[in-house]
Length: 101
Length: 498
Image 1 (cartoon, chains in turn orange, blue):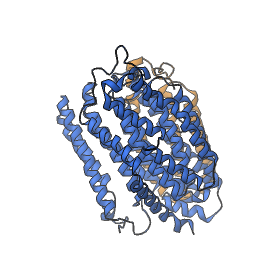
Image 2: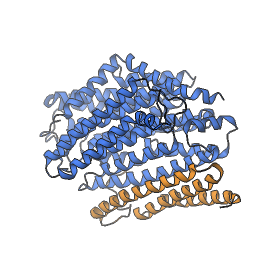
Image 3: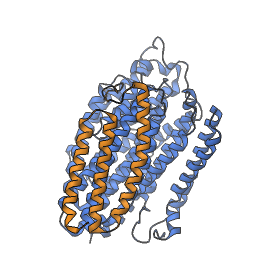
C-alpha cells in the first residue's frame, strides 16, 4: 500500500466502524448483531494495518491478535446464540425478554 | 531487580499468571477423565482452589522479593498497584470457587469445566490488571471476558441464564470494538503500544485530535466493562440471570481488573490530558451515582437490587478515579478491596436464600430470617451496612478515602453528590435489614430447606469478619494502598517530566 493511501484507509476504517456500530444499535437479530460486531473489529484491523505504514510492525502484530480473539469470540458467541435458540426457537432480541433492564 | 526483556526475567515477573494458567490446564486434563459424578465436580473445585492458592503464593513471593523492573515496564508492570489488584482478584476467585462447590451440587450443575473457566478468566483479569502494554491489556480483557461469557450462561437449562450470556456477549464484544479502536488511535497518534511510552510521546507535543478520540473511545470501552451509566444497560440483566456465585465473581473480579487497567491508562498514558478526561470521568461518575442509586430504590427483588447497587458503586469508584493523583489511585485500590469483600459475601449469602438462580428472592421473603438463621441474617446485615458506608465497616473507610482524595483537589460537587446518593442508598439497604430483623416470618419462606454449606460458609465468615476488622482497624490496608499508588506514580514521573 502506498503511503498516500493512509488517509483514505483510515477514513474507510472509520466508515466501516460506524456502519458496524449503527448496525448493532439498530438491528434486532442476534446473528446480524454479531456480524456487525465483526465488521467493527475488522474496521479496526484496517486502521492498524494502515497505521503500521507510519509506525512499523507493531500494528501488524496487533492485527494477528485481534483475528485470534475474534475467532475465539465467534466460537463462544455462536454457541451462546445456539443455546438461546433452543429456548426461544428464535434469535430475535425482541423475543429475548425474560430480563428487563 | 527484574529485567523484563530477558526470558528469565519475564518468567519471574509472570509467575502468578504462569502458575495459574498451567494449573487451569491441569484441572482441565483431570476433568477430561473425571466429569460424571458430583464427587468429580467437587474434586475439580478443590483442585482449582489449590491452584489459586499456589498462584497467590507466587504473587506473595514476587511482591515480597521487592521486584522492580530495571527500566521500562515491558508488556507487564512490576508495581504494587498490580500486586494489590492481583491479590483482590485472586481472593475473589478463591471465594467464588469455594462457594460454588456446594452451590453447583445443589443446582444440579454437574459440569466441572466450570472451575477451569473460573481459573482462566482469573488469568485474564491478572493480565488486565498488570498490563503495561495495550496488546496485553486487550488480550487480558478478552481472555477474562470470553471466560465470563460462558460462566454467565452456565445454567444453560435456565432461559434467564442463557439470555444473560447472550446479552453479556453482545454488549461485551461491542465494547471491545470501541476499546480496540481507541487502542488503534492511540497507536496512530504516538506510534507506541507501551503505556509508558504512549505517555512519554504524548507529553512531547500538543494534544492531537487522534489522541483525544482514542482516549474517549478507550474510556467508552472501559465504561461498558465497569457498567457505568449510560453504558450499564446490560449489567442488571446479566447479574440477575447468571448463577449467583458467578454474579459475585463478575461484580468483583471483572470490575477490579477493569478499574485497575483504566486507572493505569489514564494516569500513566494520558497524564497531560486531564482536561480532556476529567470532565468525562466526572460526568460519568455523576450520572452513574444518581441513576444507579435511584433505580436500585425501585427494585423489589434482592438480586436486582444488588445489581443496581453494584452500578452505583462503579460511580463511587469513578469519583475516586477523577483526581488522577496518587491519593486518588490509592482510594481506587482501597475501595475495590472494600467493595469486593462486601459484594462477594452478599452474593454468597443470597445464594443460600433461594434456588434456580435466586431471581425471585424478594425483600418480603427474608422476613424473620434473624430468628431462623441468625448468622446468615447478621452477615447480610453487616454487608448491607458496609455497602451503605456505615461507620465501623470497611465500606465507610472506603468512602472516606475517596472523599479525602477528591477534596484534596478542591472539587466539591462530586463529594456532595457521593454523600447524598449514599444517603439515598439507605432507602434500599436498610429495608432489607428491617425485613430480616423486624418483620414476622412469612408463610412459606423460600429459604426454609436451604443452608450455606461448607466450605462456602467458612469463606463467607472470613470475608464478613474482614469487612468488620478492616473497618475498625484500616490503617494497615490504607498504608498499603497508598504505597501501591506511590509505586504507580513513580513509574510515571520521569516520563511526564520529559
